Length: 195
Image 1 (cartoon, rainbow, N blue to C red):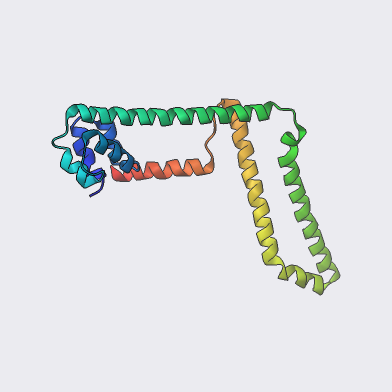
Image 2 (cartoon, helix red, strand yellow):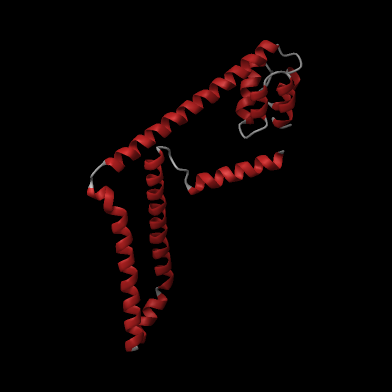
């Protein structure tokens, strides 16, 4: 038996937030709170199921209040973390440090020059017919692909980070990154499937 099977029963007994939590990814944590509050013999779904019909409504309300307090505390922690992150971003954006302002553009420029230099060498070798150098470059292609794949990947992260900083500076709020947007989309899609 899973925690989600108890969700409707707990909601019908007057604990809607706790019941919804039992049906979600935090069902085990919510189930532990419920088990302790109603005095279930075990903190398993079966143990709670057995103790739930005889549970005191006041104990059920106590479990609901504990869950709400836990959610409030988590929200406060997240709000504090976001505020600290925003303060750090604003301080970095306001700083006049040359390294802070130019390290990403310098990285991008250096990588562009590096790629152009290799292209120039390759074109020169084709022009002069230096087969040995061309073969060396072809044999090193796996290494070069891995090397530049990593370098361009880092550049992509830098570009995304700078975009988030600019949006944050304008709006005063943290802009969600690609991973965050992807996670939210997946969770929203799973929520639609369950309904």
